[in-house]
Length: 171
Image (cartoon, rainbow, N blue to C red; front, side, top):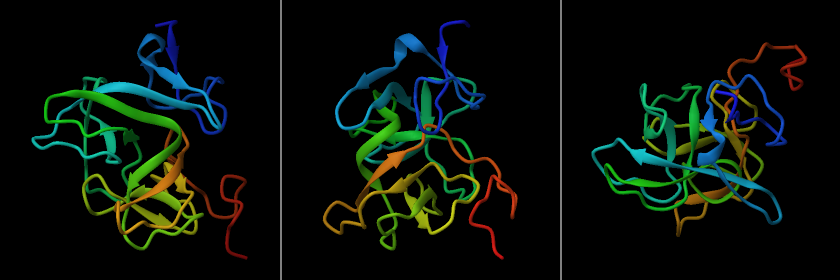
């Protein structure tokens, strides 16, 4: 298990105690304006996952994904980079800038993203909540049904009002 990399907020080359770990050999990177970390995962859903689908790690098999409708689910794995057929393997971004994240039509640039009540779709908020996995770089595009986003590489698991963990606390 020494050959593991753990996703992290910010820099992707510093290990953390994030809940998900993938073998380093499975992760590929693309360098450009920002580094993008991606991993091949198998679609465990009965239907295809369109490009930009928000996914979670599925069950005991760390190389499969599924979609949920739980708005506070705190283990978003990433976003599909291509349409992935049921039971097929495809690329999932786990950290970095992605061009398409399926989103609720109310998402605007600068909002934090988390799982919505619609499977595979993100919802935005002005403050981070448990389950936040990234933030929108653009406002919702009606043509694609998505936003551009920066993925953190892990989800926010808890916030305590008025603490260092929540600098935007009510006063």
